[in-house]
Structure formats: structure tokens, C-alpha cells
Image 1 (cartoon, rainbow, N blue to C red):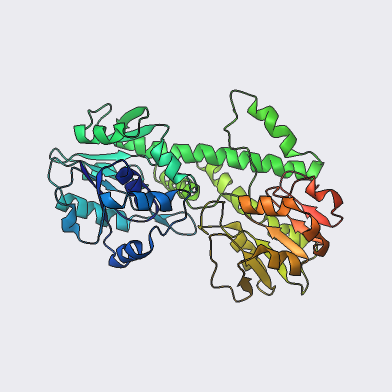
Image 2: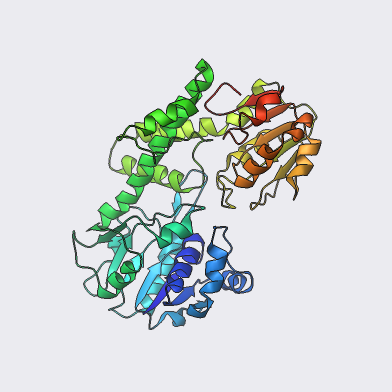
Length: 417
């Protein structure tokens, strides 16, 4: 079997490497020759646990190219380009359409083309015909868990021209490499299924954030409530109950925006989903609000550890850390992140060692709960001698570590330590 992957952003790099690791001959294609050159020279451009090792191990089975002619002779093609979104979550499908044109132009009529990019309902049917096998498959990767989820999916959701259509043999062969239940439905149902997944996750996130905010006001502690909720089988231990700084990363925002666009087109009420968007923006400013309520920062240098919107990724897409940096343009910041790099802020200096921040700043903002921060900040509380204000939204610092801290401490879901 020879499989082609068109588009070498996050999805393409992960899915192609995982497939090649199964011993399959893989063609990794992107029309941007510079992207291909960078991948050849430096390896994966995205931060994902396990991807670098997988990339090296699968090298004999991968062909990186910007030449569409290399796709000829493939038995199966996947269009896997990440969909670019603007600050409002609105999608730009230009590259996906370009790659679909390449896929259809370079493949034979018996070579299935599978769309795995995030597309709105109605997109895939535009390419359906009696002479071509075009299918849509929902991607369910999560930043920082992409490799493990690609190798061990919990289900395959597939859209076809009709409900319960028979799938091409070569595609079934590929699916069996990643054994999981298969759900076949119409294009529109599968495309909306992806949006549905993310909207229900957004509902959980928004509800947890609202309740955590109430805890902060009335003296309750959200961490005490969560185990009781997880014991309810209707909610469960895997529920999205951890409070956070709004919805970031681009994926959930894109589907919230997609729903609102569809609701407007088909005269469906979007009041619930619009409230999720509004609350996310409000909660994203938690740290800035706390700083403002405490009277600002004066002329002191502020330490910020964590820039990415979540651990395990270098993505700054809609990251709350950027909200803080934009809100205080006249404040000097010393920042650190294990993977992400920030540019375009003249009042910010990024350092390579967290200890430099801990030794020189009186205010500490912990914006991303990276495991190394949890380990470092809780191994010894001596660093607290220089700190008078800690804003720790995700409870990176344990209560035990905080026992001798006599400064100001702020956290999501509680009134403090």
C-alpha cells in the first residue's frame, strides 16, 4: 500500500508519520517547497510528545516532496492541511481547496480521497461524483496528545455520499491498522459531528468556568466539588471539569464560529453558543482582571512562566498569556516557556531559565501548567522569598508548598490558598 498525505502542518505531520510507522510507504506532500525543505532539514515543526522519535523511526518509509507528480500511483490520499482561522474563529479553506484540486488531478479514479481537514457541512459533497471516491473523516486529535490519539483512536467517524455506504477496500485496510469502531454516515452528518463534539466540550468548559468563578466569590472550592461530579455516571471521570482561562487553541473557537455562521444562514438561534464565546473572552482576562483589582504592577518587572495555551504544544493561538502582554504594554515582562516563542512585544524579554525569573521578580504569573513547572515550583519553596504576588490560575503550586507564603495568591475556582 502507498498512501499520500497532502498538507504538512500539524495534522499532516502526525498522521503521515504514524502511518509510515506502520510500515506503509508514505508520500508527504505540500505545495510549499519551503515547508518541505524545513521538514527535510530539521524534522517536525510542531511540538508533540513522541513525534520526533516517530519521525526518525519512520524515515525509510517516508518521501517528502513538493512535486505533485510524486502522488501518482498512490492507493489512498488524505487531505490533512490544518485550517487557518482568524481571531474570531472564522475558517479560511483556500489551502484545503487547493490540495483537493491536486489530489483529484493526480490520482486515478479508483484511488479514494479522504478529507481530514476541518471543513463545514456541505464541503465534501461538492467533490462527490459517480466517478470518484471522496470521503470525509473526522479528525479528533488533541494538541499535546496527537500521536497517542492517532495511533489509538477511540472511534472512526466517516462521511460518505449516503448513509452506511460501503467503504473502499484499501481504505478499510488502512482503518484496520488503527482498530476502533467505525461510524459511517452522510457527509453532512459527519461534518456536523465534528462540530457537535467540540460544542459539547465547549459547553463543559464554559459551565466549569462559570461555576469556578462563583466559587471564587462565595468562598467555595471547585477542587472539592469536582470529585463529586465525576462520581455521577451522567457526567463521569473524563468530563471537562477543570477550570481554565477561556477557550484557546483555535479548534473549539472555529467550531463555535462555524455554528454561529450556520445558525445565521438557516435561522437557528445561536444564543447559547454566543454566550460560550462571550464567557470565554471574559474568562480569558482573569489574570489581567486580578492585576487591575490589585492596583496594577507599578514599575516592577513581572515574571510570566508559560506562554502556550496548554502544556505539550508551542501554539500561542488565542493564548491567555498574550491577553496579559497586550493589556500591560508599559510593563516590563520577563517570560519563559519550554516550547513557545513570543515576538512582537518590545516590553517582553524571554529567558531560557525559570530561575532567572524567580530570582528577580516580585510578581509571578503562572500561565501554563507545564509539568516541569509543577516539579520545579513544588520541590522547594525557597524561591518564594522574593515573590509577593502569585497568580496561579491552574493551581500549579500545591497547598503544601504555599504553607509559608505570606503574600497574595490568586487561583481559579477558589478565593485563594
